[in-house]
Length: 508
Image (cartoon, rainbow, N blue to C red; front, side, top):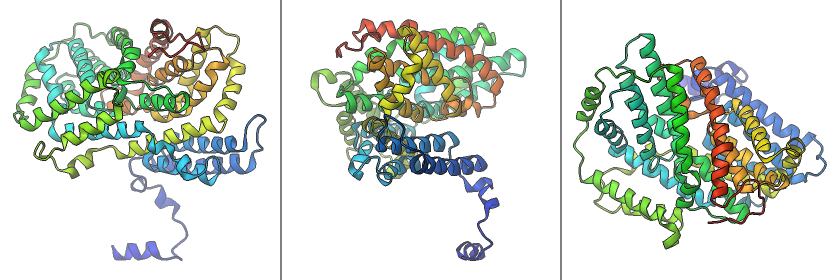
């Protein structure tokens, strides 16, 4: 060991060991060759745009610098060339170094955005749930109470579990990871006939991917892109969307699960497929859990109080993030819980908090430097002249094409949202309705498992192939696009946010 350390510190050691960089252990959790390629390309793109490219007509120098950082971030995120936390922390520094935004306090404004505090508290709540074992207890309890006997019953029950967990588990990938062991236990009950294999595929794809994503659309804190959007609307339009207002806008997305469920059960032929001994297995897993104690009920009581205060924000006027912070303080009342801080800390998704803060910082820079307006002008030339539904269709399809190469939903929405917000008035469309509809369809990127982290988690179950996923996914994407145009756009209009009226006042 000492010899290895000495060699690592020796300045004349045989050059830079590129082969060592390509060994799997050198890039934790990421494909090393792909990560290294992306790392190099990202810095080359940053240098080329910032130092070599002339300033395009209509774009400011600061806007060009922001474009360089945007390209850097996109490549880093597509290739997973850096841990997401590191990329988020680097964004404010690059904004300052390129003079896109100065001083540092302004460049790092995403880190002081109230949305970041809300996100952090949501992650801490989730960690507390995991430490107490409440997430698994809730999932198994619902499956047992509903007494599911068929594949479709499992899928519907797991959608209900996803919806319940959405209130306390703040990310689709975290919900998918929570439910993965439960789902794996259920799929192991099936044999190796074609019908049984198809049943396992349907359960995994609908429960861990489609269910996680659709349930997250309705609850403000259940899906990180929701927080990116509300943070952007607050900073750029000075419009705050409360927890309850978000639910009013988004709850019809729950109906989309009915359509995807119909399609998935038709594709995999699972309508009447039964679960072999399923209920007994669920109860066996429940018996392994210790009895619910005072700590469990105390945590649920505090979370219930926080959820009630979120739902009634329009009456008491306490901002959502402050309610969350006060709830966190209440959870840590001395003697209420016996969970050690280190255990909570180890289960908290700190990296995603830094990613969100960095994403909000570059999102703000895209708007403030004029880059969003300039990019909107370029897209405007393609989209103008079409009816509102035609524009929405073009931009939604384009979004799904862009998303083929990106894993991070947060990253994609961060890049697109400021551009969409600037583009909407040019096309005579309502900025919030247009931005939300396009950003929402981005969450339903179902063509490849690598487009959504929840799908990567589902793929780890080994029940389906990428071909299975793509074949069922392409129709699911078309369902999502059609649902946005035919259901959600009219619903927004009913609430007073018509997509086709750019001047409609905010009704909430």
